[in-house]
Structure formats: C-alpha cells, structure tokens
Amino acid sequence: MPRPDEPAYWEDFARGIGWGEEQVKEAGEVGSLAVARGMNPSDAMDVVIARIRDGKDVRIGPQPLARWMSNQGVPAFACGAVAFVAAGVGKQGFSVAHMYPLLFSGLLALEIFLVIKGLTTRGWKLALLGLAMTIGALWVALVPIPSFSS
Image (cartoon, rainbow, N blue to C red; front, side, top):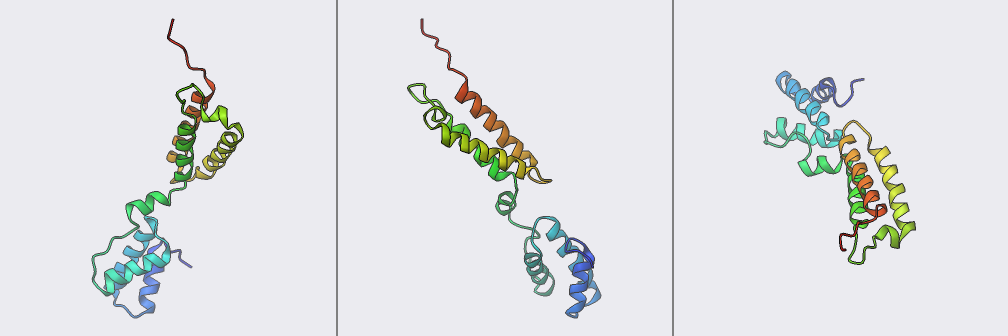
C-alpha cells in the first residue's frame, strides 16, 4: 500500500475516480509534492482536485506561515525568547529570575522539554536557537552586572 508522499497513492486515487492517464500522472506528481512540502493528505487531496479537475492555479503545499507554525522547533524558540526577556535586568538590577525563582525554574524546565521535543528533522534549528536564548537568559539572570562607577 503506497503512502501519501508517494505518487502511486495519488495515481490510485485518480484512477479510482475515472480520470485519464495524463491526469493520473499529474495527480501523482501534485499530490506527492504537496504532502512532501508539509500538507496533510486531506488538504493535498483538495489541491489535487482543484489543480487537475477544476484547472485552478492553487499553491502546492501549505502557506509559509502555516509551514513555520507547524515546525516543532517554534515552541522551543518562543519559550527561549520569553526566558531571555524574563531574565532582563530592570532599573534596580533585579531580574525576574531573582524575583520569581519558582516560575523562572518552571520556564526553564518547560524549555528543556520543548527543546527535546523540537529536535526533529525540520525543527532542530529553531529548537537549538531557543536553547541558546535560554542559556543567554541564564547568563543574564545569574551573572552579576559589573558596576563601572568609582
């Protein structure tokens, strides 16, 4: 049984609804390309039908924002950004990490979980960027600020 990212899957679908051989070949190309670019099979089916049966010029694959949001590294990146902002030093020299240690520790634990979850084929770059931001947040929170006044 072919998988949705293989042309044979879409060719079987097209033959099943009675399309001609040229349309069957095109359905195989369009459907497998849409799944390879990140669409789920039901959305890819809509693309195949719209492009081949209806002749519409529709995008093959998800929108750029949808592709970015489906990346498993995005939550780790967002959590790292929140940790970095939360560790920012205020006017009196106190950071959120010093004022709310339990919440900041929970945020760090969440970040570790999200980084591990984000280490997938497509999400590892953003997950590691989130980890780097978290390490920077720890550095900002834990390293004392030097005083330059005499």
